[in-house]
Length: 431
Length: 107
Ligand code: SF4
Ligand code: SF4
Image 1 (spheres, helix red, strand yellow):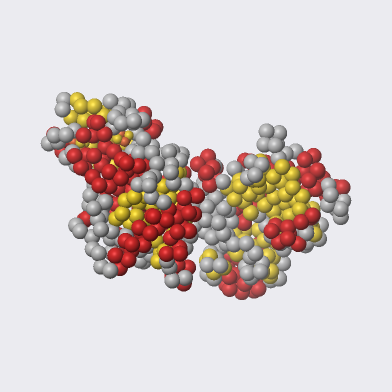
Image 2 (tube, chains in turn yellow, orange):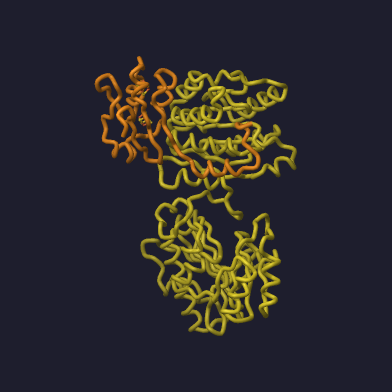
């Protein structure tokens, strides 16, 4: 890719369209602009009328006022000036895609995604496009046609024809053209290790089918082999761009598959926690099930984990070290809870990673933190893990509680609650 | 490599560095046994009274060193603080430099 900066597992529309163009899927003529003047130049070079589309990772951009149309250069300048620098759902608009406005005869939907229940890719088609697939499913479930794809056999034009043949108001030639597009979209999905390759809407114009929008989500675990895309390894943050801490965390697993360390900020800035009157805390669990169970115990007690983190699959101690430093770097946290599920991973390694991080973050106290910390080690080498915290003197801090395999999720949450209250009452860290 | 510095790279990016000057004054030489536990690669041996690599550094970098951090933490507790494992995180460093509000551990 060009455009200067690296891209993330969820691509912007303009990045997705570059892949579409390269894969033989028609897209409107257009280019990216970062200033109103540049937007005017692009519009003049492709001809009026044009569409001006804010490049943010948010759905329903049309409703949010992020897609506008212009008939002349003055209008382009005015719209671009209004959009650039503004925010859509908390995301700042820094780029606009200026494209030739399409003469739309019909809107359709086409996507290839992963079906987790059958563990196969699935092709999804609807002769009604332009709204999101969930809305479509609610309004007219019969309009959505799905075909599972045998990954060994692939997806050919005739599979595409099977997918679209029930679209009643299309001609035979249009169906053939759609079928070929579906096969191209599948090739792109496989080539770039996608989780989702979606065209919504796929529009029928006088010149044939054109991808009016592009959504391409790359599997974040495939980033290391998608070297041609110059992808930035980072955690999948869903509908918003990743935070700097998530970008840092994404590097941990990028090339090292010895266990995993997934970190996502659930509440960056802790605004939600504050609004709800909850105490923001840092959080790490071994296993997502344990995470949910511990969160369920913490929230009623008044504590809100502002990040999710799962360090499982027997990660190296160095992964725990790195991710613990990231969790503690969230400025808002007023405590930290680590709980392992009853796991078979080497918890002594987990403990060493956390200890090294604490010792570096708190050199003056030999690793004793200045916020309440609960660590529950349950599973293989849990006795060694607990002993290490004793040996390094961290367990002796009044702000630290180390629990073993007999502890439940509730015990861990209640232990944290006691520590937090004592801390608020004035317990200090001994040097 | 300096005579008094023994170092090798690790798979995730970073280095294990041993200051052999400090090792001269170390009684326990605990790093040797720290790296002989279950599933560990036994990276070190004593040669003329000092730690030396008994495994090719290329193999250690390939994942032979499992980055358990045992050698470093044991050296800190029972050795002469000669062994340091440096695990860079440039993206976190940039974030911290630019952060308007400092994290709780810096306060
Ligand atoms: S324990 Fe530390 S100081 Fe002692 S020999 Fe090993 S590396 Fe050197
Ligand atoms: S980090 Fe672990 S595996 Fe690597 S040299 Fe030290 S003790 Fe050995």
